[in-house]
Amino acid sequence: MKKVLISFLIVILIAVLVLLFGRTYLAKYSYSKEMTDLNAYYGVNDDNDYPVIYQNALSEIEARSFDQRIYIPFDTACSMFNSRFYYSEADQNVCYCLPDDRIVVEVGSDTWVTDSGSETTEDYIPVRADEEGRIWMALDFLHGYANFSYEAYTSPNRLVLRDSWESERIAYVKQDSNIRILGGVKSEIVAPVAQGTQVKVLEEMDKWSEVITLDGFFGYIENKDLENYGEAQEPAVTDYVEPEFPSLSLDGKVNMAWHQIAGTAGNDTYYGLIENTRRVNVVSPTWFHLNDEGMVESYAAHYYVEAAHQEGRQVWAVFDNFSTGTTYGKFLEKDLYRSTVIDSLIDYCEEYDIDGINIDIESLAENHGDDFIEFIRELSIRTHKAGLILSVDNYVPYNFNDHYHMEEQGVFADYVVLMGYDEHFAGSSSAGSVASIGYVAYGIEEALKMVPAGKLINGIPFYARIWTTNSDGVSSQACRMEIVQNYIANNGMTPQWSETDGQYYAEKKDGDNLYQVWVEDDESIALKLEVMDQHGLAGVAEWCLGFETADIWDVIADYMDR
Image 1 (cartoon, rainbow, N blue to C red):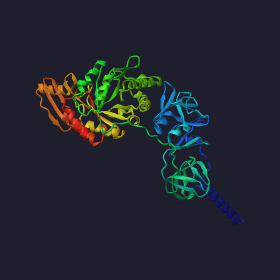
Image 2 (image 1 turned 30 degrees about the vertical axis):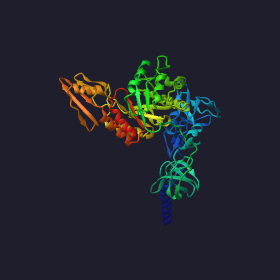
Image 3 (image 1 turned 60 degrees about the horizontal axis):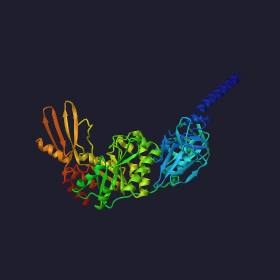
Image 4 (image 1 turned 90 degrees about the vertical axis):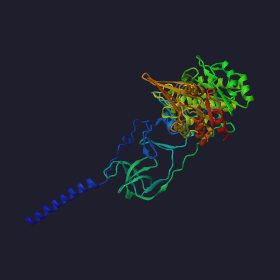
């Protein structure tokens, strides 16, 4: 009996040990059935928030539902899909320029119109403002102006979005399984996946793979539950086709001479200044600017245009702000102001038989960059309808002036003019060249990243600066070529050729004063023209008529003949 009892106790002990081991084993190796909090996993903040799965990854892109339509912030729509949309806070509308028309959408309206008179009503609101005043654009509307795919899902809210379609590694689920938040059997479940479900394999590890389903469930699944690996590519969306934008041009190279005019009497100087030039086929007088009332003021003269035309030259009248020293920010902000200026410019061109408009708005504040390029877009629609050539002047491109949107100018304008000078200017803290050859080459190479060579004109200086450096600091005076040559001769300077700058350099020390000159002459200009020719540019512009010496036209004529 005692032996039986002992045996029984041993069996009981073994059973307990087996049970304890089994529970421990199951606790360690059995599959968790706990579902994760999907709203927390995806970052859903409220019922209208739709986290975005972009290119197979949870992103920081915002998307929200309004009236059962999905919207993204206006800035996101521009930065990701189409930067041509323009929002006017002053007018509370969004504009979009086509080659020959403009679309206008009022914020909060279901109807959009065109300048040509058409009207379209949607069954949703294309552009709307939220309670905080943020502007949102409907993906259904945006889809007409960009190629991307999107699908919204619930439980949890999520938006699957993509705008590129490469071949991707895929697999199929071998048997019913689960996608988990991490690679491990104890990890919480994101979603069950049925046998035969296709998943994209983002990363393969020893026992687990990171995957995502077509409807945006992402996480990890065991490799033993996957089969039939391969490559697949989703069909690309190609519904939107960028329209072709018209462009006017001269036959052959452009040789554009800016003519600085401060009043109507200045038109008389044309005859004396133009007679010594060679191969100038465009003259650009500074005729148009805004007066204190915001209206276009003109110095245009019929006899000037007639004289130019008789000599086979076109007239591209300049609309500038340096004549008045103002920034012109206000007129750019509102549709009414821009359209009034555009109407005036077009009317003046028709009245005086002007061939083109040259825009030179300098010192543009960064916050007016979008307003400025919208002005250029809207102006280009009108100039092309009127048969006028539109050119836009630009600084040498750097990060601090990229708000001029040179690349977009290259789409809408007929010519983009690079002001390849003012490397060192009146406010510079150190003396230096107005346009060293390195600076010129840099400007051209950077501009060509944004503008086709056939549309790019490089401006060259007919002036140099005489610099004075002393204990009071650095100062300079811009002088035409002849004055610079006389200054060097009168002060007994001996110019030395600078290979680095691609021009002659002269200096003189007089007590505490150091006088320096980087000379612009026929040799320095010829070197600049050579660089331009190497890059196949559309032509040359000169600032400005009357500042040059006569020999300059020989090297320019040689450039035009090449």
